[in-house]
Image 1 (cartoon, rainbow, N blue to C red):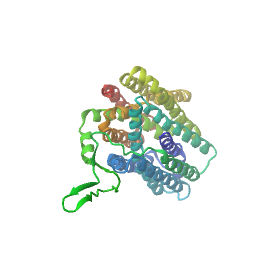
Image 2 (cartoon, rainbow, N blue to C red):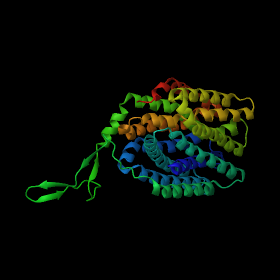
Image 3 (spheres, rainbow, N blue to C red):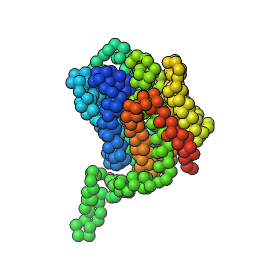
Length: 408
């Protein structure tokens, strides 16, 4: 699981850290970049909307493997479109493929991670998401190095894509098969029944063999529909939404905001994003101890408050060095939104898979839709001031933090 989370972070940070180079290579305006990101958003939203059914149908192991291969191909296509073809259309196709692969992959990782957390009986989701952050730190560092040496975007993203696809498909060999029945989720059907005239006859069900017995899933669509009607699940999703938007906005716009808003170089912009994810990683690895001591609700309140303060300081920093300090605070604030949201959604093990998929869908909706919309807003108010829109949802996250309280 650590490899799956880390590789997802590496893939994300690899193309995000090269956004300034993609912008320069294709001569794009902030609005054009927003439209490019919207292509990824559409692919991701289609994928994440169906992710619950995909994971319940294929299992988390096969979903993660397939998603990583799609992301690796998408990175290579996006790089090829920038450095070789020099056309936004090819980059848009690559980003759309990345979105299609990433969303279901990440939902499957959260479902699997929540199951492991329930099994060990303690908070581990922050550390798994910390592995994602370590991947983003590595990706941002490599991106800054590639930018400083003017490495073509194609070679950088193609190499990153190959590492992601190979590492995850290899690591998945050791994943536990996700067929362990949970009460209320599966029913057992015998392989044979007794017919008075002909004797034992096999019962053949889709995907079953002739072993000792086979499991037939209950109606997956019904389970997902019930999760979407659950009030606590939806409120957890909205709480995650604000903090996910803070994380996603940083990922897509910090490098450009430092370059255009604070007059820094492209390499400094990539390094700034690396600083953000470094402190987000620190927050996630420290999160296990903090959550065990103080509980989910106080920690969520502090996270939302720190994110608001750091974001405001970044926008209005009078000198560049203060903007880098603000990124550290912002990163700490955004660190625990997703891990805590996934844990809270999985409190009831019988309904965990469906509810985690719903919260993931809502959270990734903000993570994916917000940044492109910020690009369109930046056309009118500038990149820095467009980030102030994120504060509204962070205040909502602060107010909704009690919904994360653990269910006995």
